[in-house]
Every structure is written in C-alpha cells, then in structure tokens.
Image (cartoon, rainbow, N blue to C red):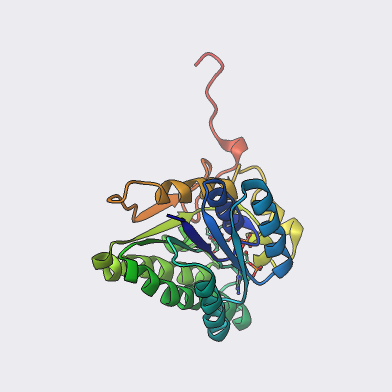
Length: 262
Ligand code: NDP
Ligand code: 8X3
C-alpha cells in the first residue's frame, strides 16, 4: 500500500531533508511551508530524482483558517497519512525577558505551539480511523534545559515536550506512535531566522563546533519511522559531539585529542 508522509516546514532545513529522505525511500511526500517557489522547486527535484508523487501545500501554520483549508485540500488528494512530522517552527530573537520583543514571542508561540496543534488536530483523526500512524514532533534540547535569553523559545519547546508525552497517552488505544526528536544546534536557516537575517551572527553560532546537519536529523526520523510495528521511540535527544545540552558546548579546537601514540 502507498506510504504517505506529511512534513510541515519543508522549504528548508530539517523538513526539506526529511521530505527528501522519505521520497528516496519510496514515500508519497506532502510538503508545506509559506514559500511557494521553494515548495515547487523541491517537488520538481524529488519527482525527477525519485519518481514518486509530491503534493505541495502553501500555508502559514499560525493561521487556523489556512490550516483547515490546506488540510481539506490534502484530504482530497491523498487517502491517508502514515507519518506526520510536526517540524515547522522558529526562534525569533534572543533577548532577556525584560527586553524581549512581543511580536517575536507571538511568532514563536503561534508557530511552534499553536501551528503544531492546528495541524495535529486535522491529521490525528485520519490516523485514528485507521488505528495506525506515526506523529514525529520536532522538539529541541531547548525543550529539555533552558538557557540564558532563550525564555519564550524554550517555553514553546517545553510545551512541545509536554504535548509529545500527552499525545502519546491519548493516542495509545489507536496504535498511533508518537515520537519526539529533540536536536541540539544544527546548521540550517534557524539562526538566520532567529537573528532576523544577520548572516554573520548566524554563521558564528556554528563556527568550529561541527554542528549537526539537517540530513543527520532526516536519517534519525527515517530510523524512527522504519522500526517494526510494535516498537515506538518516545523521545530522542540528539546533539553534535561538542554539545552536552542547551547551554554547555565547546569548540572543536578545545576537544582533547588522543596523542599520536594512543
Ligand atoms: P529552518 O529555518 O531551516 O526551517 C524552518 C521551516 O519552518 C521552514 O521550512 C519554514 O518555512 C517553516 N516555517 C516557519 N514558520 C512557519 C509558518 N508560520 N508557517 C509555515 N511554515 C513555517 O529551521 P530548522 O530546519 O532548523 O527548524 C525546523 C524545526 O527544528 C523548528 O521547529 C526548530 O525549532 C527546530 N529545531 C532546530 C534546531 C536547530 O539548531 N536548527 C535545533 C532544535 C530544533 P517557510 O519559511 O517557507 O514558511
Ligand atoms: C534550537 C537549538 O540551542 O538554539 O532549538 O535552542 S538552540
């Protein structure tokens, strides 16, 4: 039977890499984002390379009405969803709580939390009706340990952690798997968005840390989704070798290297 995945936020970073990995594995891939041209480009690339069907849906996950319309369109095009990856999200700004920009706060809460809920509310009943499905929520190390000036971003990712745990309980009777993948720093467009297009500052975050790449997370998502039917990974926290948690990371140059004789 045709295997179908829906990936939110597939115009760059993790979402794009996950869509690509599942297309390679023969899935029909449904990709979303606000940047229509990027979705069209990815659709044409994936169809050319892997031959499967790619469905594109352009909408803003913050807008409940747009989500409902897009999900109706999706339901008219595909018979079911096997895997939903709740990935669309962002950090906006990095400021102390007494100085934060309230527009940034609203963007993070509306995208990372409400957007995830709007999409899940549409797709979970489709999975429930088949007693089958897998929801993969992209959380963060920021949802496990807070860090200075991370306040609202961390709060949204702590909320994703809570939702991941509670969705799993609610959907348990229907055989629906729920998995959180919580990455540490990864080199995507994330920091460019966080620092409002300051490319130099964004680049400096990943200088000499050998950060995770989007394809690392795509490989992990594929691993989680391809386990036997009775096995569900509930929660995975993943960092690069130079990062221990949200606030403790070192530079590659500071790693103690073995002596040549060892
Ligand atoms: P990117 O900025 O590369 O990708 C973010 C994706 O989310 C884009 O496709 C973007 O699409 C989409 N998106 C953002 N806002 C909206 C919106 N309002 N409506 C629809 N789509 C939206 O970042 P990442 O790939 O790194 O981020 C993906 C997820 O991973 C996020 O949830 C992030 O919090 C999380 N994460 C990232 C880490 C990192 O260090 N990179 C580490 C841990 C977690 P478009 O702009 O076209 O709408
Ligand atoms: C993104 C990683 O370290 O900026 O979730 O919070 S971090």
